[in-house]
Image 1 (cartoon, rainbow, N blue to C red):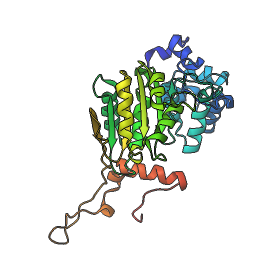
Image 2: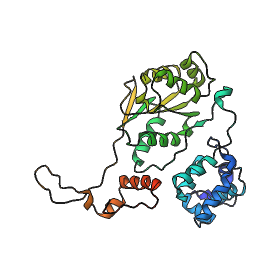
Image 3: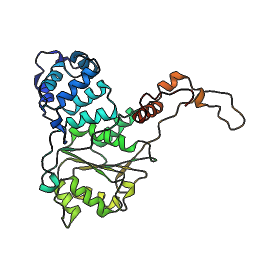
Image 4: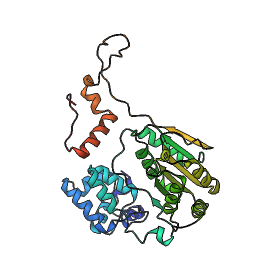
Amino acid sequence: MNPADSRPDPGPDGRREASGQHQIGGQHGQQGFGRLLARHRTDRGLSQEELAELSGVSVQAISLLERNPTRRPRLRTLRGLVDALGLGPVERRELEEAARPPAAQSAVHRGAVPERVGLPAPVSSIVGRGREVSELSRLVRRAGPRLVTVTGPGGVGKSRLALEVAWRVVDGFEQVTAVDASSLRSLDELSVALLAAVGCRPGTPAILPAVAARIGGARWLLLVDGAEHVAAAADGIVDLLGRCPELVVLVTSRGPLGAPGERRYRLAPLPVPTGDREPDGPGDPGRDVARTPSAALAHSPAVALLVERSRAVRPGFTVTSGN
């Protein structure tokens, strides 16, 4: 915990955390973040001091948030509280949504600059990817490749990793915007989605030039998730990169885009724990997951991910020798 958190006055940082400065964007702050926070804390039998110890957030900041339901936390504060409370997927999403300031009229309709952080809230924790998050965050932050593509097979966790990285690096960009391309099929469809994401009015005839004009020379991070579904996605992205000198594009795709200057980051599946046994014959590696020691299973990121996803649909699920 930061030593400054022990002061009676939370100080400028603590007041900003609880006052809503450096807020994340969204729609459901009217639910009252402070009320939800207090409810989840008391449901778990935690005092404000105990939650502060678990989360690394000062007691003063927690108290200010709970006393004033209209206050909203900074992203760093929100993450610490959510992790410390051990919320399930539904509760986590509810609290994250409540942390977002009330939505004004749609930026797309009014042609206004979008919220500084236009990212979806994570609906699950990220498991076993600490090294990858650190590596990819450094790659996106530094003055180097402006097009970074996370590749790997379907279901390996590309989208969740890229979203985590985008949230981690928000302070290094003036704007951060995400586009879900998984349901798109053409460059025209992607261009329209980009137009909406950056806050341009719909109906613009020259779509990509309009998107580029909106981004301009701003230090802007664009996350394009599921680009393998879009024909000629690389052409549109390269066009934007050429027009916008400070734009950085983080892409997820099953394969590289093949664009000039692209940096590929391949994401491998989490390792599956194995146990020793006698080989059955030539070519048999002599490994058996069923006989893996329980301690090894308990510390396996792959198993931890399995348990978390399973509990989302079957509360109380545990790993046993029978499953």
